[in-house]
Amino acid sequence: MAEDTLVLENDEGLTVAVSPLGGAILSARWRGIPVLAPTPAPGLASQVLGAEACFPLMPFGNRIEDNGFHFEGRHYTLASNTSDPLVLHGDGWLRRWSILHQDRHSLALGYRQEANAEPTPFAYEAVQTIAIDGASLTLSLTVTNRAAQALPYGLGLHPYFPRTPGMRLFAHAGRYWTERENHVPGAAQSIPQDLDFTSGAPLPPGWLNNAFDGWDGKMRIEWPETGLALSLDADESFRFFVLYSPSTDADFFCFEPMSHRPNAHRQPENGGLVRLAPGETLEGTVALQAE
Image (cartoon, rainbow, N blue to C red; front, side, top):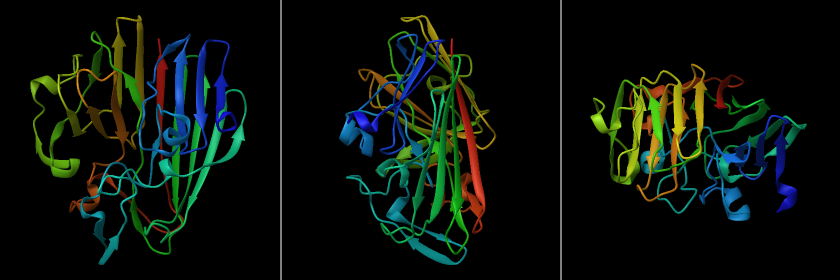
Protein backbone atom coordinates (compact mmCIF):
# COMPACT_ATOMS: atom_id res chain seq x y z
CA MET A 1 0.00 0.00 0.00
CA ALA A 2 1.38 3.40 -1.00
CA GLU A 3 0.78 4.97 2.41
CA ASP A 4 3.00 2.27 3.96
CA THR A 5 6.01 3.14 1.78
CA LEU A 6 8.43 5.86 2.94
CA VAL A 7 11.23 6.94 0.58
CA LEU A 8 14.66 8.32 1.44
CA GLU A 9 16.68 9.69 -1.47
CA ASN A 10 19.57 12.03 -2.17
CA ASP A 11 21.10 13.81 -5.14
CA GLU A 12 24.07 11.39 -5.23
CA GLY A 13 21.79 8.54 -6.38
CA LEU A 14 20.93 6.52 -3.26
CA THR A 15 17.24 5.65 -2.89
CA VAL A 16 15.83 3.55 -0.04
CA ALA A 17 12.17 2.54 0.39
CA VAL A 18 11.03 1.66 3.92
CA SER A 19 7.79 0.35 5.43
CA PRO A 20 6.53 0.83 9.01
CA LEU A 21 5.15 -2.73 8.58
CA GLY A 22 7.81 -4.82 10.29
CA GLY A 23 10.22 -1.87 10.20
CA ALA A 24 11.35 -3.33 6.88
CA ILE A 25 13.47 -1.86 4.12
CA LEU A 26 11.70 -2.71 0.86
CA SER A 27 14.51 -1.75 -1.53
CA ALA A 28 17.83 0.08 -1.74
CA ARG A 29 19.35 1.25 -5.02
CA TRP A 30 22.56 3.10 -5.84
CA ARG A 31 22.21 4.97 -9.14
CA GLY A 32 19.49 2.54 -10.16
CA ILE A 33 21.44 -0.63 -9.28
CA PRO A 34 20.04 -2.77 -6.44
CA VAL A 35 22.34 -3.12 -3.43
CA LEU A 36 19.65 -5.02 -1.49
CA ALA A 37 17.44 -7.69 -3.06
CA PRO A 38 13.67 -7.48 -2.38
CA THR A 39 12.69 -11.06 -1.57
CA PRO A 40 9.44 -12.74 -0.44
CA ALA A 41 9.77 -13.48 3.29
CA PRO A 42 7.38 -14.34 6.13
CA GLY A 43 7.58 -10.86 7.67
CA LEU A 44 4.68 -8.41 7.89
CA ALA A 45 5.82 -6.15 5.05
CA SER A 46 6.08 -9.06 2.60
CA GLN A 47 2.55 -10.22 3.29
CA VAL A 48 1.19 -6.77 2.51
CA LEU A 49 3.67 -5.27 0.05
CA GLY A 50 5.18 -8.34 -1.63
CA ALA A 51 8.84 -8.39 -0.59
CA GLU A 52 11.39 -7.27 1.95
CA ALA A 53 15.04 -6.34 1.47
CA CYS A 54 16.06 -6.03 5.15
CA PHE A 55 14.32 -6.20 8.52
CA PRO A 56 15.38 -5.78 12.17
CA LEU A 57 15.88 -8.72 14.54
CA MET A 58 14.86 -8.00 18.13
CA PRO A 59 14.96 -8.87 20.96
CA PHE A 60 16.84 -11.75 19.31
CA GLY A 61 17.61 -13.18 15.89
CA ASN A 62 16.88 -16.59 14.42
CA ARG A 63 15.42 -19.44 16.52
CA ILE A 64 15.14 -20.56 20.14
CA GLU A 65 15.09 -24.32 20.49
CA ASP A 66 11.94 -25.78 22.11
CA ASN A 67 10.54 -22.23 22.33
CA GLY A 68 11.84 -21.72 25.83
CA PHE A 69 14.90 -20.94 27.94
CA HIS A 70 16.17 -20.73 31.52
CA PHE A 71 17.63 -17.47 32.84
CA GLU A 72 18.64 -16.58 36.39
CA GLY A 73 16.64 -19.37 37.99
CA ARG A 74 13.44 -18.96 35.97
CA HIS A 75 12.05 -20.75 32.93
CA TYR A 76 10.48 -18.68 30.16
CA THR A 77 8.20 -19.97 27.40
CA LEU A 78 7.57 -18.32 24.04
CA ALA A 79 5.07 -19.16 21.30
CA SER A 80 5.83 -19.94 17.67
CA ASN A 81 5.18 -16.78 15.64
CA THR A 82 5.23 -18.10 12.04
CA SER A 83 4.61 -21.41 10.30
CA ASP A 84 8.03 -22.47 11.58
CA PRO A 85 7.70 -24.65 14.70
CA LEU A 86 10.27 -22.53 16.55
CA VAL A 87 9.84 -18.89 17.50
CA LEU A 88 11.71 -16.89 14.87
CA HIS A 89 13.45 -13.46 14.84
CA GLY A 90 11.58 -11.98 17.80
CA ASP A 91 8.69 -9.55 17.49
CA GLY A 92 9.46 -6.37 15.58
CA TRP A 93 9.55 -7.83 12.06
CA LEU A 94 5.91 -8.95 12.50
CA ARG A 95 4.51 -5.71 13.92
CA ARG A 96 3.75 -2.20 12.73
CA TRP A 97 6.26 0.43 13.86
CA SER A 98 5.40 4.05 14.53
CA ILE A 99 7.10 6.91 12.71
CA LEU A 100 9.10 8.96 15.21
CA HIS A 101 10.90 11.21 12.71
CA GLN A 102 11.14 11.54 8.94
CA ASP A 103 12.90 13.81 6.48
CA ARG A 104 14.37 13.29 3.02
CA HIS A 105 17.57 11.64 4.30
CA SER A 106 16.62 9.94 7.57
CA LEU A 107 13.86 8.06 9.29
CA ALA A 108 13.33 6.87 12.87
CA LEU A 109 10.81 4.13 13.65
CA GLY A 110 9.68 3.01 17.10
CA TYR A 111 8.10 -0.18 18.42
CA ARG A 112 6.89 -1.14 21.90
CA GLN A 113 6.38 -4.75 22.97
CA GLU A 114 4.39 -5.73 26.03
CA ALA A 115 5.11 -8.90 27.99
CA ASN A 116 2.77 -11.91 27.76
CA ALA A 117 1.36 -10.81 24.40
CA GLU A 118 2.45 -13.93 22.47
CA PRO A 119 3.21 -15.21 25.15
CA THR A 120 6.64 -13.70 25.59
CA PRO A 121 8.54 -12.56 28.68
CA PHE A 122 10.08 -9.66 26.76
CA ALA A 123 8.77 -6.14 27.29
CA TYR A 124 10.80 -3.43 25.59
CA GLU A 125 10.98 -0.27 23.54
CA ALA A 126 12.88 -0.39 20.27
CA VAL A 127 14.04 2.33 17.90
CA GLN A 128 15.41 1.82 14.39
CA THR A 129 17.09 4.74 12.65
CA ILE A 130 17.71 4.60 8.89
CA ALA A 131 19.86 7.34 7.35
CA ILE A 132 21.50 7.97 3.98
CA ASP A 133 24.49 10.18 3.17
CA GLY A 134 26.07 10.06 -0.26
CA ALA A 135 26.52 6.36 -1.10
CA SER A 136 26.19 5.30 2.56
CA LEU A 137 23.18 3.69 4.27
CA THR A 138 23.39 3.56 8.07
CA LEU A 139 21.11 1.36 10.18
CA SER A 140 21.02 1.82 13.97
CA LEU A 141 19.04 -0.25 16.47
CA THR A 142 18.36 0.26 20.17
CA VAL A 143 16.33 -1.88 22.54
CA THR A 144 15.48 -0.89 26.14
CA ASN A 145 14.25 -3.47 28.63
CA ARG A 146 10.84 -2.45 30.06
CA ALA A 147 10.17 -5.77 31.82
CA ALA A 148 10.07 -5.98 35.60
CA GLN A 149 13.10 -8.28 35.64
CA ALA A 150 16.46 -8.61 33.92
CA LEU A 151 16.40 -10.59 30.67
CA PRO A 152 18.89 -11.54 27.92
CA TYR A 153 18.59 -9.32 24.83
CA GLY A 154 20.12 -9.34 21.37
CA LEU A 155 20.00 -7.38 18.12
CA GLY A 156 20.45 -8.19 14.48
CA LEU A 157 19.67 -7.27 10.90
CA HIS A 158 18.41 -9.55 8.15
CA PRO A 159 19.43 -8.05 4.79
CA TYR A 160 18.94 -9.78 1.43
CA PHE A 161 21.69 -9.17 -1.13
CA PRO A 162 21.66 -9.94 -4.87
CA ARG A 163 23.34 -13.25 -5.69
CA THR A 164 24.92 -13.36 -9.14
CA PRO A 165 27.16 -15.99 -10.80
CA GLY A 166 30.26 -13.80 -10.63
CA MET A 167 29.85 -12.24 -7.20
CA ARG A 168 32.50 -12.54 -4.52
CA LEU A 169 32.08 -12.27 -0.76
CA PHE A 170 34.80 -11.02 1.61
CA ALA A 171 34.44 -11.66 5.37
CA HIS A 172 36.74 -12.87 8.14
CA ALA A 173 35.55 -14.96 11.10
CA GLY A 174 37.12 -17.21 13.74
CA ARG A 175 34.95 -20.32 13.37
CA TYR A 176 31.63 -21.54 12.07
CA TRP A 177 28.80 -23.72 13.35
CA THR A 178 27.26 -26.67 11.61
CA GLU A 179 23.47 -26.78 11.21
CA ARG A 180 21.30 -29.42 12.81
CA GLU A 181 17.60 -30.26 12.98
CA ASN A 182 15.18 -27.29 13.02
CA HIS A 183 17.89 -24.95 11.67
CA VAL A 184 19.73 -24.34 14.92
CA PRO A 185 23.53 -24.42 15.29
CA GLY A 186 25.20 -27.78 15.87
CA ALA A 187 28.93 -28.00 16.62
CA ALA A 188 31.59 -25.29 16.40
CA GLN A 189 34.31 -26.15 13.87
CA SER A 190 37.18 -24.62 11.99
CA ILE A 191 35.99 -22.83 8.88
CA PRO A 192 36.19 -25.15 5.85
CA GLN A 193 37.86 -23.94 2.68
CA ASP A 194 34.62 -23.42 0.75
CA LEU A 195 33.30 -21.13 3.52
CA ASP A 196 36.51 -19.16 4.03
CA PHE A 197 35.86 -15.71 2.59
CA THR A 198 38.88 -13.98 4.12
CA SER A 199 40.46 -13.28 0.72
CA GLY A 200 37.21 -13.21 -1.22
CA ALA A 201 35.38 -16.17 -2.73
CA PRO A 202 32.10 -17.08 -4.43
CA LEU A 203 29.38 -18.72 -2.38
CA PRO A 204 29.52 -22.52 -2.57
CA PRO A 205 26.63 -24.32 -4.27
CA GLY A 206 23.73 -25.81 -2.38
CA TRP A 207 22.00 -24.98 0.89
CA LEU A 208 23.77 -22.61 3.30
CA ASN A 209 22.53 -21.70 6.77
CA ASN A 210 25.46 -21.36 9.14
CA ALA A 211 26.44 -19.13 12.05
CA PHE A 212 29.94 -17.66 12.32
CA ASP A 213 31.60 -16.02 15.32
CA GLY A 214 34.83 -14.18 15.94
CA TRP A 215 33.80 -11.81 13.13
CA ASP A 216 35.74 -8.57 12.78
CA GLY A 217 32.60 -6.63 11.82
CA LYS A 218 33.55 -6.10 8.17
CA MET A 219 32.09 -7.54 4.97
CA ARG A 220 32.37 -6.73 1.28
CA ILE A 221 30.53 -7.93 -1.83
CA GLU A 222 31.71 -7.41 -5.39
CA TRP A 223 29.37 -7.86 -8.35
CA PRO A 224 31.38 -7.81 -11.60
CA GLU A 225 28.17 -8.02 -13.65
CA THR A 226 27.15 -4.52 -12.55
CA GLY A 227 30.52 -3.04 -11.63
CA LEU A 228 29.17 -2.40 -8.13
CA ALA A 229 30.72 -3.22 -4.76
CA LEU A 230 29.25 -2.89 -1.28
CA SER A 231 31.16 -2.66 2.00
CA LEU A 232 29.55 -3.32 5.39
CA ASP A 233 31.00 -2.07 8.68
CA ALA A 234 29.36 -3.11 11.96
CA ASP A 235 30.22 -1.68 15.35
CA GLU A 236 31.51 -3.82 18.22
CA SER A 237 28.00 -4.92 19.22
CA PHE A 238 27.95 -7.25 16.21
CA ARG A 239 30.53 -10.04 16.34
CA PHE A 240 28.44 -12.86 14.88
CA PHE A 241 26.82 -13.35 11.50
CA VAL A 242 24.59 -15.90 9.79
CA LEU A 243 25.12 -16.75 6.13
CA TYR A 244 22.02 -18.06 4.39
CA SER A 245 21.24 -19.05 0.81
CA PRO A 246 18.77 -21.73 -0.29
CA SER A 247 20.69 -22.72 -3.46
CA THR A 248 22.92 -21.61 -6.30
CA ASP A 249 19.76 -20.93 -8.34
CA ALA A 250 18.47 -18.38 -5.82
CA ASP A 251 18.85 -14.74 -6.85
CA PHE A 252 19.63 -13.65 -3.28
CA PHE A 253 21.63 -14.53 -0.20
CA CYS A 254 21.55 -13.22 3.35
CA PHE A 255 24.46 -12.00 5.45
CA GLU A 256 22.92 -11.28 8.85
CA PRO A 257 24.98 -9.25 11.38
CA MET A 258 24.02 -10.29 14.91
CA SER A 259 25.04 -9.44 18.44
CA HIS A 260 24.68 -13.08 19.43
CA ARG A 261 24.69 -16.61 18.10
CA PRO A 262 21.42 -18.27 16.98
CA ASN A 263 19.85 -20.30 19.79
CA ALA A 264 22.06 -18.42 22.26
CA HIS A 265 19.30 -18.60 24.90
CA ARG A 266 19.91 -22.34 25.14
CA GLN A 267 23.69 -22.11 25.55
CA PRO A 268 25.36 -21.90 28.98
CA GLU A 269 27.39 -18.78 28.16
CA ASN A 270 24.38 -17.06 26.51
CA GLY A 271 26.21 -16.93 23.19
CA GLY A 272 26.62 -13.16 23.06
CA LEU A 273 23.26 -12.13 24.50
CA VAL A 274 23.42 -9.14 26.86
CA ARG A 275 21.77 -9.11 30.28
CA LEU A 276 19.67 -5.96 30.50
CA ALA A 277 18.28 -4.90 33.85
CA PRO A 278 15.00 -2.95 33.75
CA GLY A 279 15.66 0.37 32.00
CA GLU A 280 18.99 -0.66 30.46
CA THR A 281 19.60 -0.34 26.71
CA LEU A 282 21.47 -2.32 24.06
CA GLU A 283 22.41 -0.61 20.80
CA GLY A 284 24.25 -1.33 17.59
CA THR A 285 24.96 0.27 14.21
CA VAL A 286 25.74 -1.11 10.76
CA ALA A 287 26.88 1.05 7.82
CA LEU A 288 26.62 -0.01 4.15
CA GLN A 289 28.72 1.82 1.57
CA ALA A 290 28.21 1.41 -2.18
CA GLU A 291 30.95 2.11 -4.69
